[in-house]
Length: 207
Image (cartoon, rainbow, N blue to C red; front, top):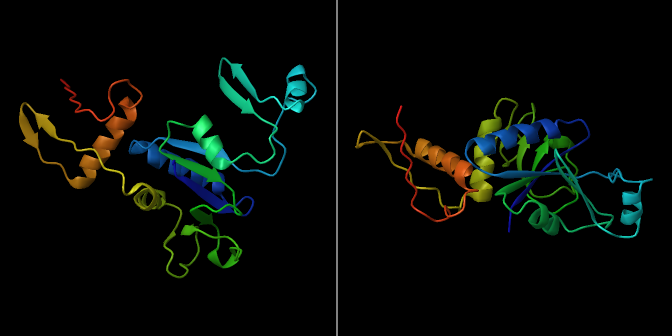
């Protein structure tokens, strides 16, 4: 099952900004990330058209345009796992903005003292506030540290690729962090190519 991390907080707390920062950090190390925005506002935009009539009749719609796809469905409460597996089957991790009421691991964006008692599953606090309890706190400017912590908690059991670097036939020692970074970054770039899964891959570069 693809792990989903909620980024929760009150309105205008900085959830979208943090999602953007975390997504960039994840992509930097080769982690394929998806994004779901949880909202209580109506989002289906086909009303008043022939397409809207199909939606009202219970027919799921995919808008296929030159700049991408947009899926729309009038089902009132689709299952999160169903959405992720159907629309994001190739990702390693999904960021969900919002979702305070959902049973998910999460980062709370904002003052820990103002977090509602019913919000569960908090892995970390984020914001310019004093630390609270045993849950680790991260401040603006520490997004990379937060991303590394979250990857360890959510994907830590995933085996890291083994990487070796040779220059003119001589093996260059790599620190563990650099070996992991190179392996995940390279795999992130070539994973979509057929015949690469679980294989021994060699890349030769001449400059």
